[in-house]
Length: 570
View (spheres, one colour):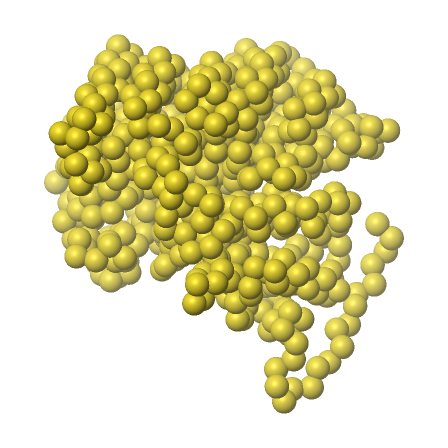
């Protein structure tokens, strides 16, 4: 894990002190909100519907147990005893008093954390795969590259006032994209060329919101030493040509689409040739400096865990068996596993965690996973280095905390933005819909029968809940002062990226979850095998059969009965 040097530490301490003076001037009335707004946004402080919200950066989702304890302390002391983990691998406090924010920043600085560049038109928190460094399917650990990008982009004077906010994600698995890389302003994949040399595929212009785009490839193979100069060239082109006259057309995805991929690539190449051999070129010494911060922990030499995991899945402890089957992932180190800890407990908003749970979870990280944990972009936590033999003990401890829900990648493992309960931009509430879904479909046997299904809910077109890339997406809209919800099918954020399509007319609040039930019933009736995934059925049949199942046959059409596929007992 990257450790601050004396310069890093001084920067975050001085930033907290500086903001303290700015808050004092705002509290005294010597500066007005119009003057204060850009200052607070530079420190991650938003004004929501009812209170300020502070967003804390968690670079590429990596936390130490010491840092988690501090987050718990802040929640307990300066907020309402909980924090909210977000789809950007950050944490938000929804109720801080303005006069306490400088104190919070001081607390964060004491454990090498901050809220810098979590808002504003700058490069935001760099995100990555939550299994980075332990995934058996990755080419290499992408976190050192995410850290190099973080260091390069933090306080970059040229990119402090971009046309719009800018998000970068890094992945390294050819088999699975677990970081929604194709839906970022810049997506970086570790890759190999035909000579077996490591480098990067750079995608530019992805995003969601009112105009969703899947990022096209701009840099087909960028050498390791050229990564930062190439990203600098991309951002320079965006800074020069991105629109500033219309906030809705200011993201880089609009620029790439307007110019065309080839023309945009040509502008990047032209800019890059001027700077690629300059000071941004990475040396092997500099790369090694950062890579060393992510050296593997002191693993024990253990036998492979396959047989042990099977015994847990098939054993008498059914709760443990379900947990291991759904929430435990393989690990590149024999005898170890990565454990997803779901923050999707019944009656609790997705991503929320109390101060008590944070403190106790920090103890579990100390005991079971080398004092580290990760935040996922699906609003869960991961203990990435757990001995398989420790799973029964860990599961027991998690169950006592209400954190043993065995629903990873199932229908109740959903994403939801804060919606109209908190956000001033929202048109509709997201959290009550999410809670109803978790209640309606909580039977784990039914969830297992449904298989892998992602549900993503946004309260407005800005898509903080990633509704465009849910297998089932739900978008809250306003219809003459009433909350309605559009139902979308067919989205996916991975290597098989796709953008969901609206099924039909929007539903009032009381009808959206029953409409989902009709969608799921149709899926179970027409899938060709128990392991045919929901997304695969949608792609095979198209939306028309689902639309008929939900809304009934179109006027004048003759409805044909669905032919149910008969499966073996399972």
